[in-house]
Length: 524
Image 1 (cartoon, rainbow, N blue to C red):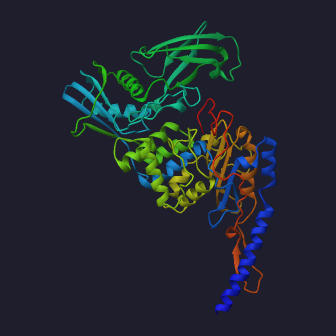
Image 2: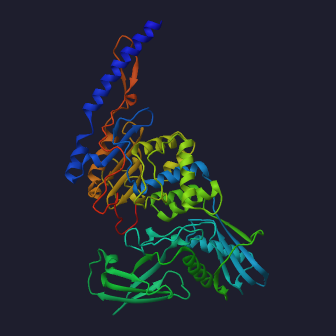
């Protein structure tokens, strides 16, 4: 018996050695490498891992251990940690106290609001919060509005430091009290000789000045690039909008990240309160919430719903708030980025995902320094697949050519509807990670990271590799061993050669920074 076992191991070793040679010879798909070559992207700046979920090793692995900038694909890591640590039904609360007597619809005292980082407080949900206050007898407030954002402890953030776009909503800072993703929406209405700017909701105390020059043109492409918003000074609540506006654009909406979160919350709360017929006579002041039971604990949408919006539309503020929430829930308030990073690492290690190359800053991917390897992302995708919460995780991802940030990607191909993938885009970064469904009905874990100045030209290569994964029955059908031992070894169990040329950090660009700068629009 021992000799038979030794003989089997010897023959199996020869077979596996042959498979290694086969994988090495096969290499990366020619259509994929050709597309990279045409885009001017060297293979050394690309990482790829492709692994059927019913296999124990990848069928493709290239630069798998390199620490690369994943851009917004990092949101997958934060989402995975959140589902595991917090659970799919987790909710944030915004707590409200009436510091005074309530009689005949009047609160004679201050209204105190303490936030815990709810990133789902849209205008609609702010209206629902205020409706709950009305139901508790509060319609008029004869006192101050006291805001307590102390659940988060975040260092001051310059919203323009990342890419020089301080008013871009994707650069909004996180906060314990956040309303409408910290964005204010303005409506631009062209008239006969000028362009009127009207806020989506009333902004008490805010002055809007339009210096837009109207042009008799029907061309409207790039209209946002022709507009420059500015805040004249920190002590003046005034927004001045200059530039050109084509009459052919008609009425458009413009969302801007104007103030820090608590100030935006104040504007939106007051605006909605006035619109509903309420009054608020006092000022807005910072303060600490009392230790007593609140008048109202307003619950957010459940985590699963928040993750769908976060990932399908790559919402940076939601990811950053979630990252901080993980730290506060695990290590106690106040939340800090350091606590968030520790919490994420802890979950990954518990689930067997390598953190050796992981660098976390804000959990959203809007970062110059965040890093992860394609191998670690693949490990995480597989851990999620074998989790009881896989349905919640996968359903939060954009579907190719169907919705979210992939709605207009890879249209007209067989990939449509056949992959759930998170996108990641910075100036020098293009990334995809998620799950692909093959023509023979199996799921494949897919990771592709590009860190290069030509990264935005990598879509053809992404499409070529995705189509290869989707249509070629590689490594998914069992191969019958015709040796005398007669064992069946699935292709998916083939060992693989990692043809890495980049083991470790990514090369820096001419500015001395790895990765790139986001252009206008959300980092996806």
